[in-house]
Length: 378
Image (cartoon, rainbow, N blue to C red; front, top):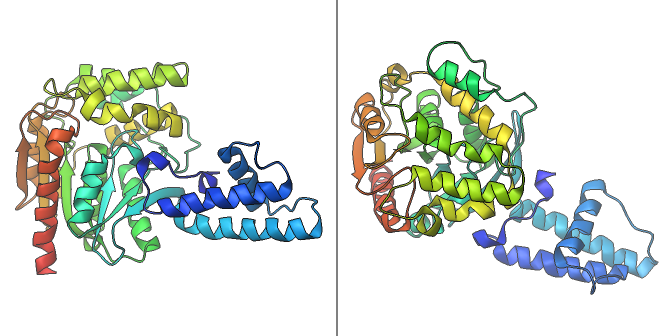
């Protein structure tokens, strides 16, 4: 049902005006049916979704039926703009765009278990105002994108594989997730994009650069890693991040996710006020998939050391890392920059595994400067 889910209005989607139109369409259509005024707008829209999904026509007088059919056709037309889902090789992927379509694309790939609604608006709008069209996607097994049918690995199996005690057969690989991103560029008719990945998204972005170098105009890896097994590990921070998996209901999941992001953020900023934790309720109410997070974590652990492949990358690369990151230590950022020839490293003081609002302008400036430098040479 992903194609029929409305975008989160708190995100101020690019087609917000179109969303308002859908609500008006739904109101008029439901009034034509006869029960419009007393029903919540979302319920009226759901009735239309069913008609769009099933192609059904209600038993109405001729005049009302014509009005109803017109509204359904209008909603179908609107969905093609404001509910953007495309079918990748392995399932539906949900995405959004912000900015002028004629501008060069910047593709944002989020981290473990995160959704596109967890990007700060200040980051997206800052990049878009600089002359880029920002494309965001929900990774497979997260948000409104498709869910794998494979059983998720157990925590014990993840830990054993991370310690090198046993092998792990993931439901899919980071390379598969990189292919989803490339398929999105194909769907949009784009030759390539400036690929920006955060945490797990940085690993996926690295795979785009390694396996599809012609599609990545530039690479920006934020608070990510090469998979080098000799880097410092912070298992306590990881276990804190996994606490929401045990939540019994939505409210508990919101509270657990908030605490998790606070645990991996910086002591200098309250993540619940200015960081990722403030998006917890929005994210959980939109989609909560503990099993999907574990399958994604399995893909990370099974991917291994990427340094040998990264050494062959010749794409202009920027590495951004918080000095106070308790989950993926700053040594991982330094290792990433060292692994890619010519990569530039930006270390952000006072930043943890988070994008706190006070530090977003510096991150935006670094991304934009990097992408503009590449655009001048293209």
